[in-house]
Image (cartoon, rainbow, N blue to C red; front, side, top):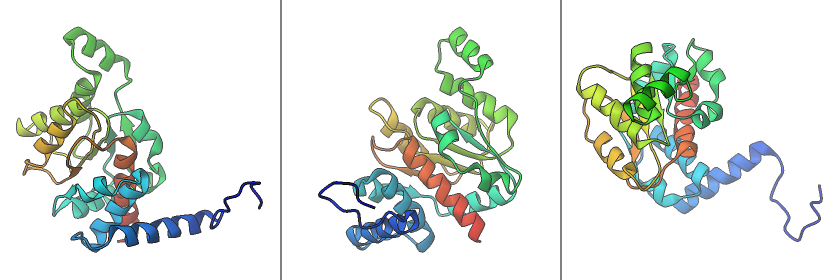
Length: 216
């Protein structure tokens, strides 16, 4: 296929594009301390962001992968803070085991309650999520207030997620919320250090966990 450009792609085969990408990532990353399964998560985060600094900053709780795989295989649901995560996640891998992906942030009752209390919809959506779901995987990539509220609910004994993937991006409370997540001992987590993150890399980590669940 001729794109009528001076540059010629190495391949237009989608599977080979992934292979080339992962080989480039492995070469440029060099030596690291991630385990084999942890690396499968981190390389997808790098692949989604093209950011090696972000990849190196990822923190994976020792029980995170086991807890995530077990949650998926036991049919637990995924709760997303924003619809971008819900849309970007390979739902079929969760539905195969009886789970699904849910996002409450646009629910009418959430919007009404957030306005009444003058709080973010992200906060109220987390309160609704823990009432409607036992355990589950919480994937937070956009709203630091959602992550901070989830941590509060955990500390008060009102929530017990199976796994938290908390990688919100931004300048207001993003880095701080992830630092707080890294301190908790009650729940396994995947997070990163600093302001970088976002829905795209959160989806990448979540999809990596779901692929591991299919393989184990």
